[in-house]
Image (cartoon, rainbow, N blue to C red):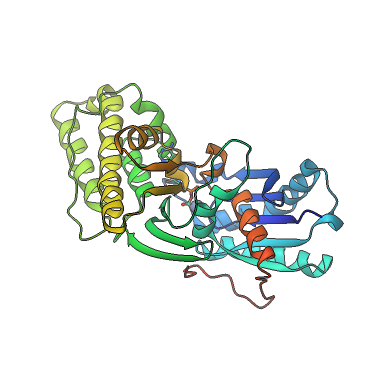
Length: 335
Ligand code: KG4
Ligand code: ZN
């Protein structure tokens, strides 16, 4: 009999529920929260209220779309952390209550492990790579290079010391007047621009660590100065600004991934997180970094989704790694 898992994700601003059977996804419902668009970032209190409104209909839709009944579910996997505490509590409390109601096990999932392990979702097309590989987690909350020795044996070998790579997109996008999250718009607008038009600073950071806050300041100062000197600059140059900014961000990542390959001698790279949807990163890395295998998730599994939570649920179910009802949602959950 295949193992049927209900996955629940509510760590930030997406309420998502998915049903998997073994490593196949039967449904993956995501309710995006548009309420944050005008704030330039996620407002925690609004996020947790929206999760409360969404969680019941989203889970019901996931079950209906998968064409199963509640009694077919073998276990419930939920995001224990890291993330916004108020948001995590909604998904966590719901998962616990339903597991009591259905009398089935609960499985705790680490959100960042799930981004990397979304690679193991079977979608009929993608090739799977063996351990060890390097996980490159690039999202709105994190920027990490991880040596992945096994499903749950992961060592972070580099991470950001300030802003995440997603924040670099979102905060610079806000400076250009783009709504949150700005990453997808910058990606789209960059296609019409010349990435060589403007140059921004590549920070010097030790080892495999990253820094993005200096780039944001550099970008802000440059844009404000130019706008003052030639009013209408941002509007006229928006495509070139997006392309140049995106190129700089991708170059910062490129240099560190190349260094990580050199240090570890591991040549299989698995990407995860919202920023791994970025088209320039996908194209540049695949065509310029030779003799390396790059594994990017399908677009629907890049940003936050419950299918990646359910797939980890399946892997933990097989390992009989079950959670506890008294486990506390943890905003800073360690890997
Ligand atoms: O993984 P995710 O959904 O949430 C976190 O766990 O943080 O990532 C969200 C981030 C946002 O910063 C968003 O702007 C960025 O992913 N993002 C992109 C693209 N699509 C989403 N950044 C650059 N290019 C994209 N195509
Ligand atoms: Zn995420």
